[in-house]
Length: 463
Ligand code: NDP
Image (cartoon, rainbow, N blue to C red; front, side, top):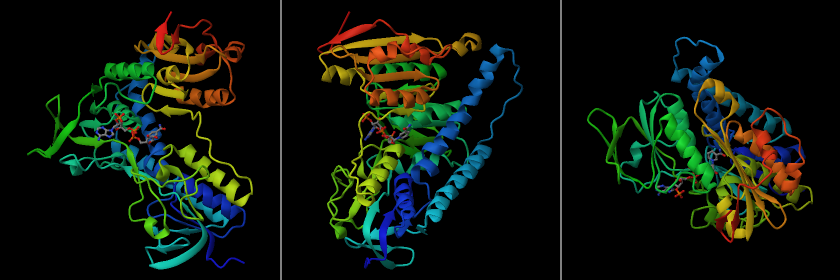
């Protein structure tokens, strides 16, 4: 008999927390889960899910144009932002309900309150002031967009938290940052008809991706009409007399726009959580420090997902939650595997990627074979749209292992998911070569690039 109120208390009702709570409750553990905002967390409420819905919405303008090349005449077009926001709201509310239903069906107690630690086994429920105890605690409180307080006028800017629910679609926007969120939202807003400028401090957008993807996407975005200002920074934001915003840049003067959005990374939600009271260590970025099994420095307390700042992705948080359940409740110690995570940037065109970029592979291996194809997708032949698909395989010369695959083009995210399996399985280029093509697809290019486009030896491109 446990002397605690709960076997497990989960703080945070996002992807990781809900999975941990639901699985533990389903095993008969006495579980409570607390969420201060909405169940579903960033992914469902103001991240991946609404983002993808808005990506779809933003693609229709091009679909209508492309249709003409296939014999269609598309009549007058009009876009209603409020209708999209309402439709999105309905869908995320449905998903939020499913998350709660899953928890309730498993027998977890659902608490709509902020929860803060008061000790190694105790938690205060802020809504009621009540303190409860638990044998184990999982912290899965996620993160939030950095407000970039050093920027004068930062309080006039929005982040991805507000972008989904703006009362009006702005006519013009400046988006600061060159990562996933900045790039995805630049494409969304542009597709919806907003005059869009992206401002990024580095030489090329998407710093952690393969150079070909970065350059290819940059060119495609500019061709669509998105203005991209690299090696530049916002200096200050001020309200103009007519209620717009004047964004002062370092190199490109003042940009006067309706909205300025900051997408400069996300920081863990650890402030005020009572971590000191429980003896939980954090790093210099405020993220909870965990070991390979998601254990914090306090016995019985675990942390998973974005609050640990390992890899800020929904499937990673879910995986970490499942490893926690295996380890703690199924006597099967499993530590999360963060190697070879396939990922996609839902830009237009998309980037799908798994494994090492050419640049990173060149640092790790003496000799590489690079297979690269650049072609016009079939649909563009009749639509007349000028666009390119780029595919790249990075292969080690010594053992022919495929260590990186990078795709810029339609459905690249879907392809990356499947390629993730092949790389995880350790497939070689010979495995790709003896795989029959699916014709006619774009993906067939991945198994029909027979000769290397060039080699990289000791970090230098040769032949
Ligand atoms: P990212 O880490 O992807 O990008 C942050 C960007 O902000 C980088 O370009 C960075 O520049 C820049 N930056 C950081 N600090 C400053 C500063 N002080 N001044 C100017 N620029 C700065 O973060 P995001 O906010 O875009 O996204 C957060 C996380 O969410 C991502 O890392 C990703 O894991 C996840 N996500 C995943 C998505 C997906 O899977 N499709 C979609 C959206 C988010 P630099 O490159 O020079 O460091």
